[in-house]
Amino acid sequence: MIYTAIDTFYLTDEELKSSPSSKDGIDETTETTLRIYGCDLIQESGILLKLPQAVMATGQVLFHRFYCKKSFARFNVKRVAASCVWLASKLEESPRKARQVLIVFHRMECRRENLPIEHLDTSSKRYVDLKAELTRTERHLLKEMAFICHVEHPHKFISNYLATLETPPELRQEAWNLANDSLRTTLCVRFKSEVVACGVIYAAARRFQVPLPENPPWWKAFDADKSAIDEVCRVLAHLYTHPKAEYLPVCKEGGSFTMSNRTRDSPHHSVPKDSLLTTTNEDTSNKNGENQEPSKDERIKAALDKLKESKKSDDESKRTVDGGETTREKPDTKLTSDNKTESGGERNKERERGRERTRSRDHERGRDSDRERARDDNEKGRDKINERGAHRSSDKARTGKSKHHSSRDRDYRSSSYSSREKERRRHN
Image (cartoon, rainbow, N blue to C red; front, side, top):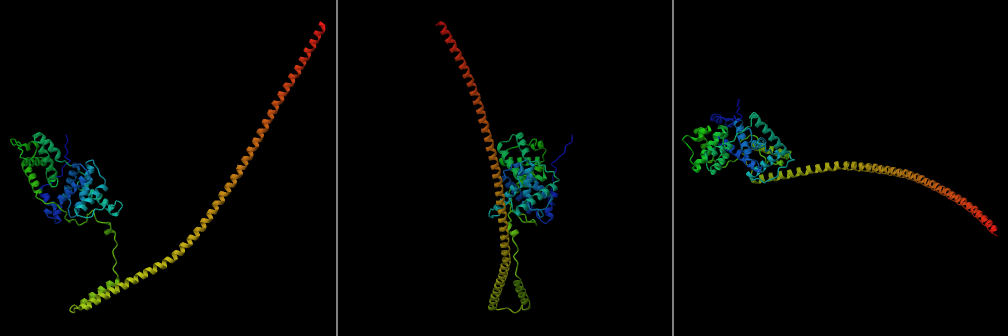
């Protein structure tokens, strides 16, 4: 059976002391405060994004691992924290969009620095730059960790260890809270999660004065060492002595989420040449006559003369600009009027052509309709003539039959009359 340990990112105390931040001239206290500040940002942003605790814990571990390889002076804490949250949400299968992460960090920075809360415009250039920086920092994270982002948290070991020790439920909640606080320190980089879980359980038991079995020692059943447990408790106790962490501008590159677009995109105001000349003349006069101190009246006169000159230069520049604009506007108006007349004549011609086409179509349609009507009339006349002929033939046949019947009747009557007369004569 081959066993491969994925969670292998652990450092010694000497390696932590000789970190890249210390090489860049950052002392240990500022490094710890920046670590705590970054973990606070990750925790608060995870709550605002409605992420599970596993995502926030993974993001804090990735944050500590990254700054074990890189310096705080080269990578801004805020942007690295945002990238850690974004990457951890994807690792723990509860992803969030980059837009959501950036909006949350922008709002957090506004609240922390007491700035007016403004919505981050997703169509602005500032948002595009922040999104590109977020993806770039995520690539740096994956590169420094060699794409090995597996993290084991002490929380799952706490529940199992306390179930075997048969401790009260109050101890479980306290140990869970201490495990969450331990993520703000470098314990996740120095010790395995089993050792951190044993240290947290020991600290919680000491607070609630819950006795744990010592004969044999309970930590040996969980592959832990007493010295490591004591170190975990010492680091946690030292953490609670720190004040609330605040941001320290150590990074060379600016990494704020609240920088307005106006300050970036505002054009630089040009300084007039007259003012430059006056300043240069004043500097030369001051250099030549350093010992001669001018009086107050002379200073006031010089200031008034400067104001008058600046007003005159402004008026002249405005006049020149207005004159240029008027001269430019005149040919433009002529061209526009010519274009309008040409376009109007072309439009009238097109309209007349369209009317002629419609008239010709209507005329052709009228001719076709007249022809169809004549055809229909002819067909109707023919039908009527045929009907009349049929009626006449039927009438003739009927009259012929009636005449034939009448002749027969006459013969029959004449024959019957003659026979009667003969019989009468015989009798007589």
